[in-house]
Length: 140
Image (cartoon, rainbow, N blue to C red; front, side, top):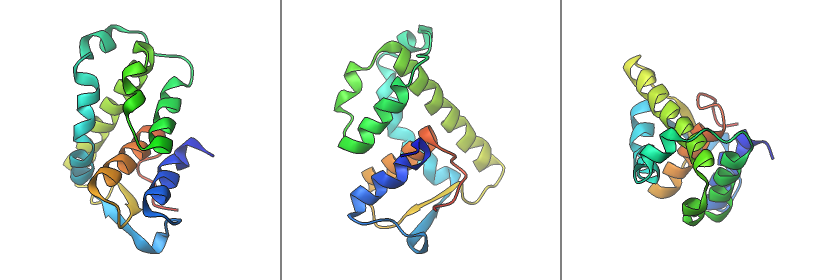
């Protein structure tokens, strides 16, 4: 599976069926910011250590995000190395900045996601999409 499609697979698992382009909702940059805000807490406790660490040069960050999608859980997060957390922190920070720039530029929709998911699943879908793929692409 392409990493940029992990979010779509995750959404399908949460919905119990393959998502359809006919049943998608646009997500504004502001709404996306609200949905991913709680992920800041994943980095807060060790922020200074994470920022001081060199980034992982392997695929550990992608693996951690794939584990989130497969298990619908962040239980594995405490076992991630500082270099992997650094990559995830950098991606998350980049996503937050991109969303704010899009919001300030008046962008109406930054992405589309399937309808019908609960708040947690919507948040994780948006975050996976931002962290692993092209955030501006439409559901396909």
